Length: 356
Image (cartoon, rainbow, N blue to C red; front, side, top):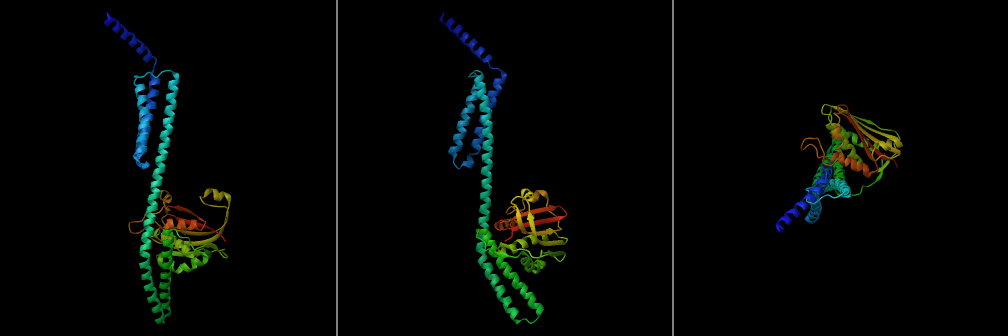
């Protein structure tokens, strides 16, 4: 008799459970499952970020918390626990939206960590370059001193004006090389520049003969210098380095010959121009324009040309530091760089400096 009562009681409880489960429709089940899966995704993403936090505790704690919430909802959606009423379903919707926002936030955190790691890698590379440059600068300067001493002795014994002129050019090149080493050390170590009033026209005129020897005979070098150009406040050595880097890049872009134009002008920058160009400001500026008739730069490459160590040249023909140094030097002179290029038609660099 007791056994019969127990069976009847079980049947009654089963009927109650079936009626409760029948109250749970398919939409409620889907909502609960979505909330659980989203929270489980958050838990997995948090565990994925474990390598960025620097300690396993943070990653495991986040994983455990989100995984526990996901497990509870999975149990509920498996009908071991009845979802309940309409308020419970609204809570599940809120959980789903919160989990989605957490996924977006964790993805943003991962992006920030990756960007920081890339910046640290670039900083480490620059530090290595600075140390390497500093290490070889002393020996290189000693070699240049030997060259300069021999050139001076030869100049004293020469009576041929043409030979003396050639020796003077060698001496000039040695002095410029010493200046370039000093500026490279400045770039690598982050030293402050030595500012003074600089006449860009005079700098270009002094470099013209050296640039003519650097470029090929099939390339024409043309200077278009504005009269009465106001000076800028800057470092002469850095300005020479900027012009030489741009001229060498232009030369490499014209293997079959062409033209390089060095042009100076006074430019009035208005508000419309300042809004279009990053770093531009309203006012009167001295503009140095370096243009060529070379192969041009594809749009996909143009966006990366100022990044350190980025180069499209073959191994051993480029370090990827030339244009990065140009951009850095111009920024140190409170200016900015604009570049435009068309494939097959040439490239134009425009450097803006505030006039003194």
